[in-house]
Image (tube, rainbow, N blue to C red; front, side, top):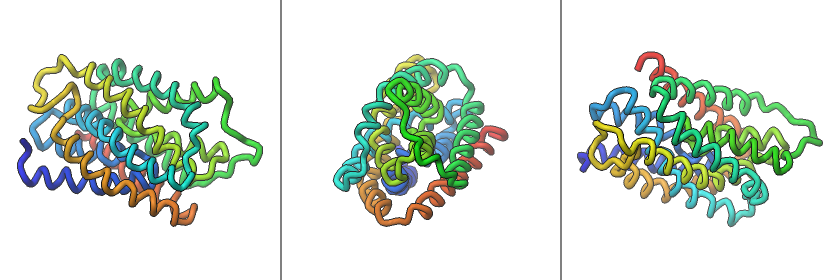
Length: 270
């Protein structure tokens, strides 16, 4: 059982990430990942294993945060369920491919660098606020299957709910950002479920895992973070519906840049 100070750190992390998950539709995994890497490293794990367990554990928490967040968005009619239906099948396929195959094969340092580059790119796209052509709409069934596969695959590599890709993708196709954030929150559950199963399977035969591990997922951290994040996710969702669109985009970009910088440092210098 973690010591009281560690429990307090995990609880604080859960409260903050739950709020950001509701506010930005990012699932919370992108916030949890860097901090969990620091926490797992402090437990004496190697840099490679610490990154992988942080990514897997953060993804597992999204299953709980997503449900709490999406309920609040759904009550306000903001979730585009037609988009969820179109992207979800590809997300499951892409997530399973990443978490059961590529994730286990890559070094943790490479995963950290990959995380930093893609998150930084997504932040830049959001901050530039490029306006898509008015006639541009979401792609058809095949296009959404392909897009969902990419979102699920990238999410599986970095342990995020997919909001760092799905929100900019939807905004680029003239989906209002509040609807994109809400829809991304709903997509977080199939992303988290598919990838968590993969992390458990791919890490099942690993040695030197800390006590309480299920594959790459560290259950004590999952329990604390998830129980705390579900209490603040609705508050973040409520705030998202009150903020101006431009301000919401700026907050989204700032959070992503901060996390990208940390993981870049972790990847380059361990």
